[in-house]
Length: 153
Image (cartoon, helix red, strand yellow):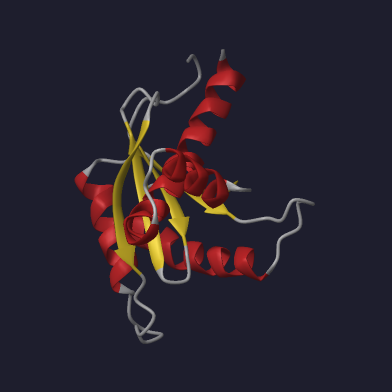
């Protein structure tokens, strides 16, 4: 992939209750699930939420070169309340991971695809809820990696 900067990237699926996190290999070929973080919805306005702090720690620990955050847009390409929620999360996360760049990318249908793939593998119910956020983060990151590969080949 000429023009593609080598290095690990993290994919993030921001939900109302949980944040799914995925990571790729340094060559940007394969995204894998990393963890699910519980959202810290009780942090005061002047405090960094614990999930954002944990994500910033992962960025440093894995020497990440870029963070890819899924931005939910509807099928018509319009940003609704969910997208505004993710944009606000990104405004908090960006400074916490600086100087690592954060990129918002279209995540249309990522959770739907992740849920379907988990169901096809026999993962359902509580077990599915436990990993669907990570699986959605994998879909977001892998989709972005594949698009970069198509763009630079």
